[in-house]
Image (cartoon, rainbow, N blue to C red; front, side, top):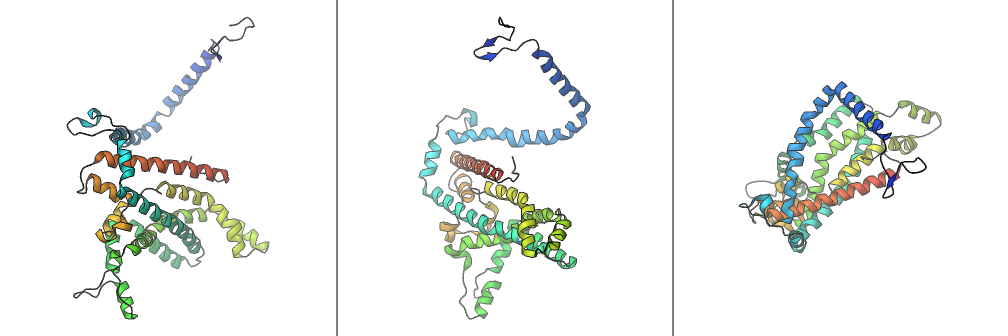
Length: 335
């Protein structure tokens, strides 16, 4: 205590006094009582927490490979430290630059066309008044999402198959031939491959986003539409001033989640569709990482780890910036 009876200060900070001790003790006492009272609820959380610690957080020590010259003999912890050498090697690699460019272009297309398509699709399905028709349309939209990319990519190849001496080709080329056109070998045309990836991704994944938007649409009170109709509002006014504002939180969350994958490509989709003819436009970061680590171009685990680390760090920054931007629009984000 000083001369005035106030708590003494050390380096400009107030020293803890005896009066603070009961407060701290009471906090820990309340916490102990709370945990003791609801211990069974926390026991339910324990398996999931253990799973995260063992399978998600514990393997993260492997990130250090990005900064080491890895040797299987020495192990991850015993390998020598090389700093940012692998990041410099990655940036200087023209294959990385090509894969990064392709990934960014494809994901921007998916964001521009796929994201908006899901919103419009949900709005259109919501306008269907016949329940049986609505159920059929919803099933048709949801079904592709539950197929694996191995199956779906096979269907894409069958539909786009180029005709040969023993086969008439896929449905698309058969239609082109019937209309008097020349068949197109879609999967060997670099200028068409990005479009194939974007369209097939929209067909397969739009059902998931549509489910989220339809759930948000179902939560809108019908009385809002009834009141708007009494005031003379038409369907367009209701859509712009009731429907879209009410589902905007769901749209914002889905936008943030999609932006999180802006620098991450769908390996299953690309790997099952691409070939050497379309590497210039179809080689993405996931296939690049696969090739340099496991796919026959060597076992450069350090470079692949550095690439993954950089991409995930960039994705985290994009998510934080997007969430901050969404919060300024008075819409609840994910953080």
